Length: 357
Image 1 (tube, rainbow, N blue to C red):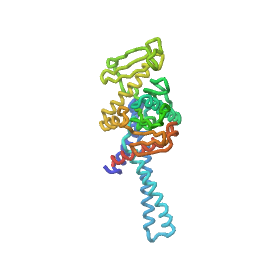
Image 2: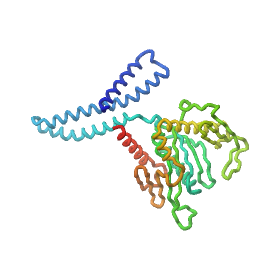
Image 3: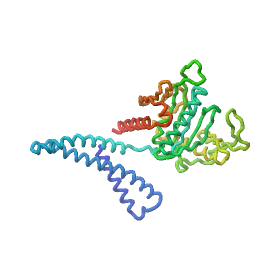
């Protein structure tokens, strides 16, 4: 199907939905809401298509003026100068339209569940996991997103064995989904007398937050165990059985929550994480390629499966997937992630455009 044929089909669908929405019998209800959203989404694409077609007509008109040997020389020169800019504008509009025509990831507008776990490297890995968790917390603050810590398991000396958070805001998952994977750090530990550089790793997983309408969990499929919360070293930090362990029997997924003093609150947070993991599992099943991609990105926390390296001695951050290196480690760890995130999104868009052609 040519680009013009795609445009015609899209415009036909836009007109068809507009006609349906004007019918009295369509007013109200779930169908009306669904059609209204599709009409609104298509409206953005239609506006871009119309701008693109106007740009094509403008370029054609300017080309005709330039090629008209009988025309006024001054007008031909002006047309020649305008033609250069018009062609650039047309190329930009064509790329914009092609991107809009690519099917969207339905999870892009969702909020996200962030999970960070210490991987290879012992206490150094736990300290690095804490640094990464704070980096995402700072990034959320910069973007104006809400960052709610769901749970954490600290080492007692500033490190994190694991931590999770719910991040809410506009386009959260779209901007954070490429963070999933193994992050490697190279630095000299404070306890290292010889000044040798150590390498350790932490695993990051970013999951789209699922609503109950996305994932229905049957009570018969859920085992709930309660126990007493424990702090670093295993000491009891609560005299009541407020900690909750949720086991989804069909998949074997286990989520434990103990940060809250209330069993009810721990269960609610645990269910939020469980729904996100199940939703991500369903997305993976529906798209085998995405499932394989996520498996290779998230991995097990081993140093050999890295997506990004943070080198402290050289103040360098390198994203190995796109070959991007930045020499501003301190700023990145303080939440200045936009340059990396934008580059990853651009790379993904380029790949999807290539597949669509």
